[in-house]
Length: 457
Image (cartoon, rainbow, N blue to C red):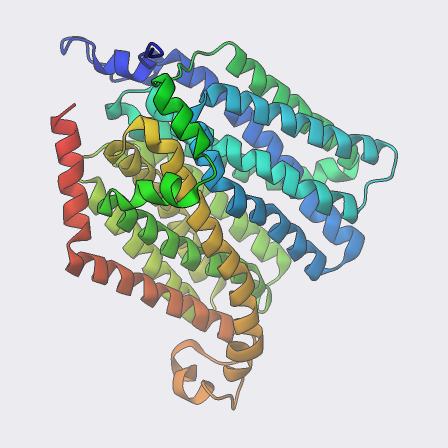
């Protein structure tokens, strides 16, 4: 006996007569309702995370403990992403998101109680961070995979642009208010405010529809039994489609390079500039990211989105090379603006491509694989970049150093120039990756596969 299949809202919209095209997200009320709730939740999560980063450093003055919390937040995604992807393809994504929001609320409530009792400490945050990160990563995979159930294909790009816009909007305003809130209302009330955003987000899910695509009882039993089989359930999805595998590999390599420059950017700037200058540059980057996210929806909707991804990646590489070679504050600020403008464009385009060339029922596993490999890349970046820069490249680029005579005339010598060399190398590596994939014809095959999906729509 088979479970009756339920058409998703996206399928119903795709099936509408051609004289009634669905070309506006206002015709997808469930998406808009869920998106608004998730935007509120993202704001709360980013606010409390930023406040925690300041609070922990103020309490400990230890970069090691601060870095330990970052690692504690990344590791759960590494272990949970494969299982989360299977769960999101086997069960209701709406129920998964609601369960994760409820768990985030409970975990945050524990920290809130400790804060109100003046018992909050770094150990408690270190213990709760993996729990919060675990449910957060599962929630994000379910949310990303649900977009294809809520909007038709021609609106994937616009929907992804909305999602990125909410993230970058929070990134713009949170640094401006979190410090003030921490000084005025304290960490306990900030945590309480984040709990309120989780509850509001959960309510939007309660009143939204996100149908579950049914499967036969026999198939469901067999697939649920294999939930923890990483190779067949997650990696198997990738190896079935060479283009998906190549794209996720490409995105993981880019994540590593972006992770390296993000880890070293602030220390590199602070070697030659004041913290005030850094603050202005970071704020400028936030505004650029918001602008890029707003542009991304339209750019990712173009038929030549592979070319858009190519241009965004090449532009990122150029800004990395120039940012590493320059020491002028105004020049670096301009380059950071350009980099931050194109970063969300690349993210939205890549996500739209994956949604277009993969079936909705396997997108949980596809985006779980992307999250898994991106986390691996980020962990390597977080651990390798500071060690390599501090122990080898920084000393080598000091006057009289091993590399100073060779490269000093190009990027200069002294403090921060070793980190600048890392930026240059990352940019050149990005060019090399693009060149190799172009020679392999990977971009051409992806464009052809997307065209076939739209023809078969």
